[in-house]
Length: 440
Image 1: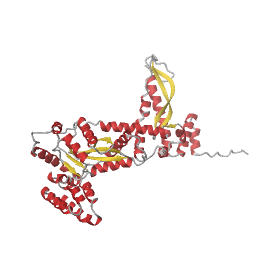
Image 2: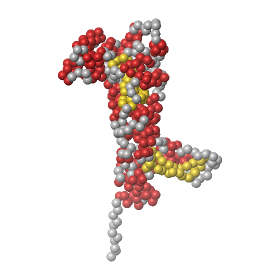
Image 3: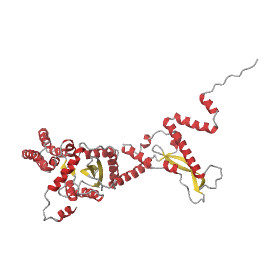
Image 4: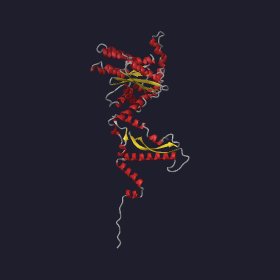
């Protein structure tokens, strides 16, 4: 009687592996291990394998097939060396092949490696995560899983390394913002406001082009929101190509320092709009709670007028009525009263008027800057404040949309030019300061 051997049952994986060379089986085993850690880890393992193959293919293209004599080749293989590539916000160690010229005088660059070894993607990831509120201590927790083996070789994830990378990136952001050419920029309006950082004041400028595009123009640092600091900022904008002769509307929060600096750099006739919401809050601060609703309603009624003279008359009448019982509120209302009506005088109405009667677009940018800075506990110096603020302004720019009512901006530009040409020229007898302003 013939004995029949029992049938060996194998899995599909074992059936495939039995037919594969040992080297392929080893590679598959590594991929299976990576797959157990997650799909992303598997993708990383495959990606690193592809990178290795790409580098090997480039070496073969330059040096020719391995172990084959080629009298026409221009370079030869020169072993391997340790290298690092950027991967998922970290630096990962790999082995890279080396090549040298045929005469042995110099190394031949490996283009594939140089591309993936670029540190800029790492710096970009660090900047985005830090501005999103990730601290240097928690940076490592936010990284995607790339597999245990890859993680063991990862670098540039320590607190100090992330801090250095972020500092370099924000320096670049500051340089990019402060070196922007403004020569070809046609602005319809400029908003200027201040951001306080633990005793230091950052003065920021936001431009609105005639197409309705919002553009961060620059910033300057000082101890307070004084005329010297604002003048330095505006002068820097002119040095970078902004034409001071082009008619534009300046929107400010009511600071006398801002008004003085605008007058000095852009001339006496530059139209200025005081933010009506800042003015309203200042007036309300001088009134008791019971009197505020009625005064607020009258202020807003005047600011909704379409006729400048009628609106100005309503504000003057309100100031006269407040004089006896609330002289502080009356004085606050009279200060720069006519400049709260500049958009009415220019004939701007509708949606654009609501946009330009306040500094809200600039305040929105500043809110983004504050949000990116919320984890900073101590401002070491002014340079740190400038770096963080510039990075926040450029981050806000990514989210900008055209201002509401932008289709009326050409009308605004024409109205400003018409006003500048119809206003009387300064007197012939001028002080030395007036001469300097006119020359500017």
